[in-house]
Image 1 (cartoon, rainbow, N blue to C red):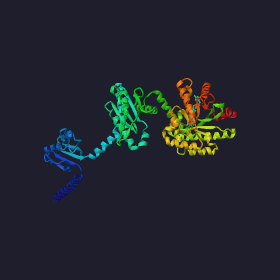
Image 2 (tube, helix red, strand yellow):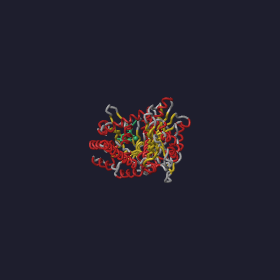
Image 3 (cartoon, rainbow, N blue to C red):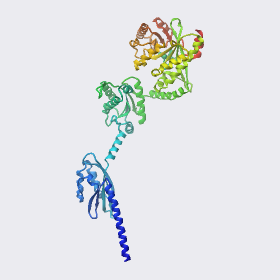
Length: 573
Ligand code: C2E
Ligand code: CA
Ligand code: CA
């Protein structure tokens, strides 16, 4: 009796345990978003469990019903799914496949699991179907974002680097060539500022679409960043030679592009080209070299092309080193000034001095302002540098003024960046007044490039400066746009004829004619003319004969320190 009771207890406990697990499994099945097919090979039964109706509109009562599933999926996945659904035939225990339903949208993952007995005969199989559409789409988007640039649909920078890496490895083995073209839309910032960012983006898209047409298995096209694109050509020759590609780019750019707002726009690009293996042999170096020469091409004017060569790299590295040292030099005020006298031709009377900045590097070598001023203009250090030159030279000039009681002109070179500062005039006037210098003793040397940028703003400022009595001199005349017609309306006092004219005026009849007519016209306009870079007596005599007012140059004085100027010039006035 006791035994029977014990057995009943055990059975009851077992039953409770089974009921408990069944509840648990039912709950799992009911809450699961997946659907299942369970097949038992021992008693030859098959049934669907859980969310089956959500996925498939048919019932499975025997194994052959499973075939209906192929009516619900896209054909290309049928074979892979068949292999999974009959996994027991392979002897494997687990596998999975991803397929798309016939609606073209829903992605489903099928996992199969087969259990075998000790004789390797299958006993049970479960197939689980799970909707993974969201996950798949997110993954696809991620994959897209990893390879493509959203704005243009071209490859992005990272993927371009990877693909170019593949090109380089292939070229190493096959001893082939590769060309990398770094293409940049000219004046893009200006376009963006004047037309707005939306149009700016459209321009990038338009150029991207056009460049995308070159894409094939030997040409990779990418949007690198902002207004820059990169093209890599494997084994450039024939239709995909550098010449063929750059010519067709230039041919297309001869015609305007039409924007969505009906606007017509002409675009030009600068192209820098590096080549494997001559320019560089690694992916990143190839891109860097192409970018460096693109920057050089950009300075040469619109639609320029520049090939990479060693001197350009040298110049680039030197500029980078100057740029690094420049900030430190500004911080430590490592500059000095030289002053070069300017004379009236008549009586060789001292007219004034031009302040010229000097920078001595720590190793004692001088770095020319021709080299570092353009870099300072690019990185903004021209603002503190220019302010220092102004303060230091006006202070020095005020001392001479007090000591020698001689009124002359202090000429200051003013960069366009400095001139564009809104507080430029106020700062200058404050300084002049603080040192008690007369307004007409200060002359600002500006270049034609200032006038090109924002003519109205520039001329308003010039008028204001002239109203205060400050003199304005147009420097390097003849090297820029050199149009006498726009000078008419400008409140300029002096025009400096560039050294390049003075150099050749006695050698070349054309230069002679131009120089003479410049002097004649400028006099008619009422400006004073100063010739710079005068090195010989003959040049001096000639300039005198054509009626030039002043001269500056090694013939009379080189630029000198404040002390030298006092000893050799100011002492004798
Ligand atoms: P620039 O304003 O045209 O200055 C005249 C340059 O010609 C000076 O070179 C001067 O030393 C040089 N020069 C004068 N006479 C002769 C001559 O007879 N023969 C020869 N071969 N050269 C002569 P520097 O001092 O090297 O300055 C070069 C340029 O750097 C200047 O050209 C100017 O554009 C810029 N610069 C110099 N100082 C400053 C400054 O304080 N601020 C700014 N923004 N630019 C400056
Ligand atoms: Ca000057
Ligand atoms: Ca000059």
